[in-house]
Image (tube, rainbow, N blue to C red; front, side):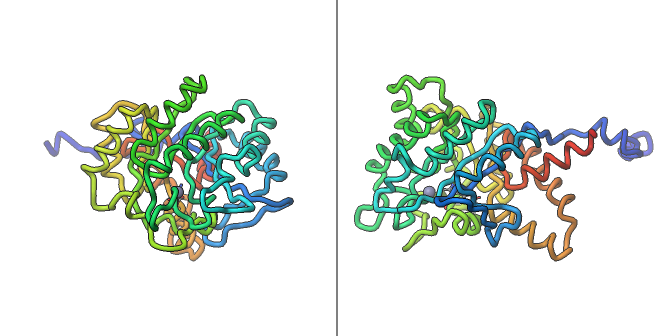
Length: 326
Ligand code: PBG
Ligand code: ZN
């Protein structure tokens, strides 16, 4: 005890602090989400998400080249199709928006990890994540469409399939569809504990996917629940998930920590659009130091136990981390 023990001894210089720091962010931790829209020559900034754009397929090459130069390992794709319909047909059509984007990205790079978000809300005219039956989402009818979507993305070169519709049995259904098509090696990163969160607001502007009526509370999780998150996660692992995700990240760090203490497979955390927008708004007003707060928040996500971080800050943080060593 004091005075023999003085915890300040190891805080005396920045080199000492560097030596004993427990949690380090690495460029390898980050995945960057990209919004791909129909049309030509489009690079459109998303108003609640400064610095984040919708791209048309023809402008993707430039963006991907920049990401490769920065040294990013993976991207997560979201699509805005030209036509939305009741069954979200574009999601599993051979010439769908994401199918085009995957082919384009593959032609630019073999190395970049392409992750496909598998959900129907960006493709349905009603904006819900699955097929409607009497104004509610029908779980079992949705499963076969999600599997079709996953197969269609994997067939053109997606590296990781990421089901995000929160339908029961979606991992099992997609795993067996992939296996039947001889794609045993394609991993599934499941949005296992995805909460019905208001942090997705800016994303729904970006992806034009706001539900036309009601909300997602009958399929996404209630924010008060952590035991239920453990059930979702263990079920997804049993169904064949290779990576499990918790989403959003910052308001659910306790969930990430508990999952880390219970399971040994890789954990992904989704640092969502609303988390990004809040930081940007405060930073643009000079109310906080944006880069410092960004680093502190991302460090908290890693410290809580995440292995992968999906973040709109990925470019900025990797540049910041790279500066330190240059
Ligand atoms: C699709 C999906 C959403 C997000 C990722 N995949 C939106 C939603 O469920 O409404 C949110 C991502 C973000 O807020 O950054 N279901
Ligand atoms: Zn959805």
